[in-house]
Image (cartoon, rainbow, N blue to C red; front, top):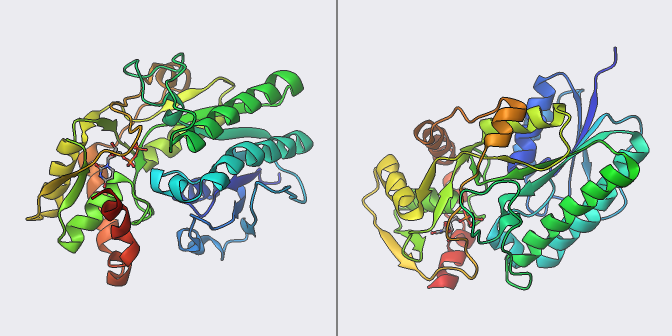
Length: 329
Ligand code: UDP
């Protein structure tokens, strides 16, 4: 029997590249697609020698043509960190809206099942804690994060419309903060920012007083959740994340300890609309998918730290790594 064939958009990104690895390991033929605006070929270069892997350099906001059959599509293309969507707000809106529309059209044409990557950002600065899938969110449409949040909200709506109107097999995952190897050092997210700063011997830039919370999920746990959701028959959104919540101040202290750094946490102004608290309610994932995270923060952070430590020194000292922090000072 021929292998199942899957298209993964955003394949050269942090999550996309781990998904390529997982689906190759599961015996799929994988087509990776990326326009390489925020993705990096380094993340998937080990796959180019495999006959089960193909790469298309393409922007999914434009019409997508894939010859041959497709059984599944994972739509993971999107800038995904506040610094990225501040830099490229229009592309962020386009990939979530036009890009999703193109992926859905392709899925319909190929009779493929599609899973789209939504996010806890659709909850905005949540007034309900922890966040259940039934909560509708608290989003500032015209704030700096609105371009990402609203694109993802539209993405969920159009995906559901294709499901109800066309009978397309659709899945929607709401991803909470995730970390692991292959995150971009300069994406402005708190984990690469803190680890990068510790490795360069700089103070750690904590935004605000650090009392805001996040709940960090290790990438292999997330990938397992995505795999199970794709193979399930549930079309409504499902939260996948680690409910172990921590303040950013405590998180910074953990990184200082892990890296053995003598630096300290310094406070910079809090970015506009920065959510004050975030923790997934994962009851649905547990009940529907039998899924829950397995990797502790201590384990996951150690692996991630070792990854960043192994990067070439010149990566670490690229000037742009410090520009975001400066903008806030
Ligand atoms: N943050 C911080 N210092 C940094 C980068 C981020 O204190 O150098 C904070 C940020 O204000 C937010 C949290 O860490 O409260 C998580 O930020 P990130 O950009 O990683 O993700 P998101 O806000 O999308 O959850």
